[in-house]
Length: 177
Image 1: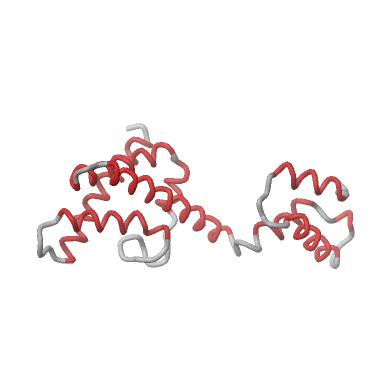
Image 2: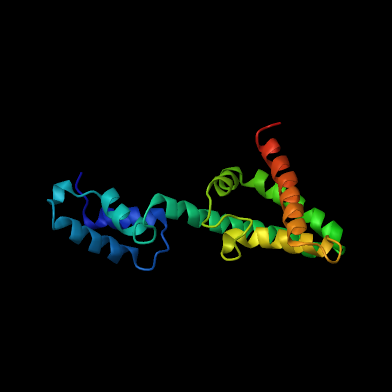
């Protein structure tokens, strides 16, 4: 199927991209592809794939990780909001757990993706990146509730127990149990 300039413009407009100047990027990618093939062998899908996706994400895993980062940032925000809405530390901590479960139920596909896509270093030990913001919040909240002088191992175990409780509940509910 031949694509003229109007077809390209209409397809781009219908998708509603917010890329900057996607039209120019598509044209540039099309010109590059035309170096190797005829116009009959050029497809809009191939041009869009070359430009819109791969310039931002080198592979599917990179795209999935970016989705996880965004989801984790959203999860951390709803948990912070839940904590701030409470006047008591323990009640606020409990509310963050409820927010975790509500987030999972409201975003099942994203939540499952977040829980099956591992960031480098893992969730419990990493300190950087949006994916770990919710885990940092959990550790901070647990640390504030532990008795003075609690060890790092006690903090780690309490973090795992708390996460396992809300995560297990969320997964049971998502699976209809």
